[in-house]
Image 1: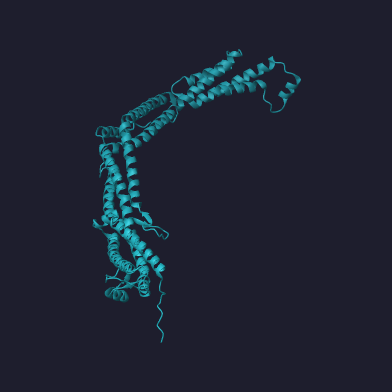
Image 2: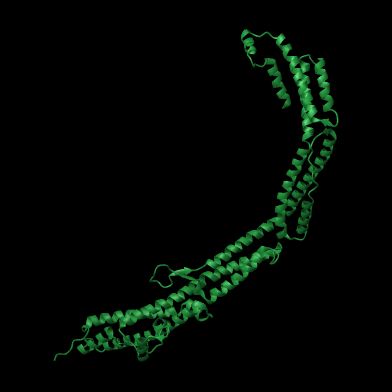
Length: 470
């Protein structure tokens, strides 16, 4: 019966030396990583902070892994020391020693101490049976399996530490800057009378203050709740970025409030000028309405049978609001003054336009009378130039029109009819006289004789009449 061959071939001296050197390099790398993890600033912050939420659970798991890592590293160190002592016995190891080295370097030669099961080895009802048996009686691994396990645990623990440290490095510093800006904005708001309960911006400042305070407490106690892992799987621990969405919302809200308060501050600096302009606009509106009321009385006295629109009284409500605006300025209530001035400026301009339209509507009959007077005088001037001013018909109709236009009350309908009759009479007198005085050519005479053709002089008088009417 032959001797059974080993599962793995026995290494020769050079292979054993190379395997031992490789194992020593891995041991050194693991030691450096564990020492760096021990001194990591994020680890110290996690250990010294009262954690809550997701961070509390993940850090508890990471601490278990770190404890297990050191226990595994001690077993790894013991194995390496044993292998080095075996190799140092003689320069040329015996076959038995080479077999033992092969077993140490490639076989399940690492015996681990009993450790509590990790979270990834538990189910809803407790530990997995196989894991419990292994951890209760001590687990045996090959060196390469041990290194692979330690690398995985190290990466998971480092991922928690790096993520928490990244959040603590990014958000608290930014929140400190935002808090300083919030204090300056609150001070500015207080100086212009923007206070909670009196102005919406004051209520917004209170909400932002409370929101930042709560956000800072959550970031400090549960930083991993503000960590967004990388979308794609990454071999590097800590892949991802801090979630700043809540901070960004508060920062935008503070910007909006600051702009609103700056607008109120602009109102304070420009309030007196705007009040002066408003007083001037309302004063002009009052004067225009007064003029319209006086003109209405004149129209009623001088123009007969005319519908004259009524003129409203002064804008009392606007004057009361203007007085309230002046009072807000004296009491430095800029947050109330700002919207009131905006409304007053719009309504005051509308009031001035309304007053001017009222004056125009009231004085329209007087404008019509003035136009008729001008047309009558223009017609008489033309008649005089042609030497027909003493014509009895023209004198009669001119006197009739003038009596109506220069009497009070003036009947505009009758006056317009009288002016039109005078114009017609002037055309009847001037056109035949002009036809007798001028000698037209045969072509011009034939043109004038066509049915429907207007006499040239009549057309000329018509154009002059239109010019006078304009």
